Length: 316
Image (cartoon, rainbow, N blue to C red; front, side):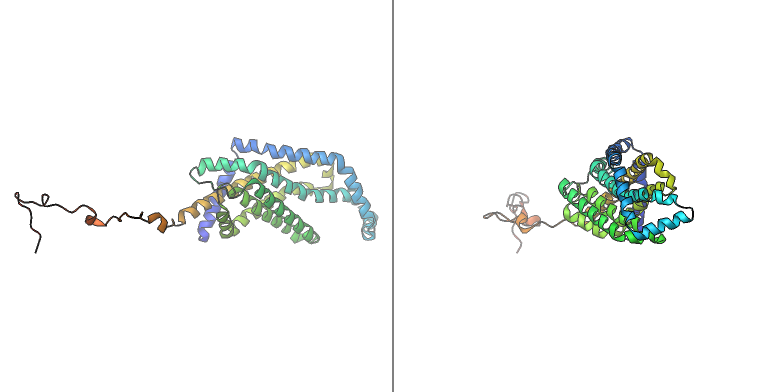
């Protein structure tokens, strides 16, 4: 597929996804993962926030380098930072879990309904080949989630380098979104071979969608970076962050949907129809095949070729 055509398809699916986000059904569907994730986050925070902060603070006090750093901050009048350091670390560890949980909830609770909505309105004649069931989709999503968490842990020391902290997390979120959403939006309509071919042929456009939505997904994390005093409003900011994550991933699902189903439709249009096999054209035993052209009809009799009441003689 030419580069210009891919860019056109990418932009077209972007605007369609943005318009679908205003659909009343999409807005109502976004409330379900929002309620589930907010209830889970607030419940875990209510029961484990203080113990998690105490555990992190006790772990920091065992590192002599950290203790020396905090003493130096106190000597220069910045001792308040040591008070909020442990809560900030807890939030920093919780944000990736919240992001992944929001993505999986949107993929599991919203995407099937979004697929039905988009398919019925834009692709009503597209055949559903059911190339992936809910079990395979769940295993695929969990495998990608574990891989993303492993990448997050391995790249964590690089986050302290200012340029890389703006690049690595969105790239990891983008890769995870690309892998999970591409599978889910094609599971209903594409066969296994079609899904693998589309993900291979359109790898870079799909990864581009994932990276852009990864940057959008990283934006709610900036709510915690404004000021350390924002920890006072942690419950409100958690709810706001989860809501923003849900909206971002719902938009991502719609973007992947419009792009992937249009690509699937083009793939089927350009796939040649297989010729009939010899078994389909075989003639039953004892039956003569029809002769081509006029010879297939019965030969004219003398009466049919008679002229003036006399039978026509055959040519010499």
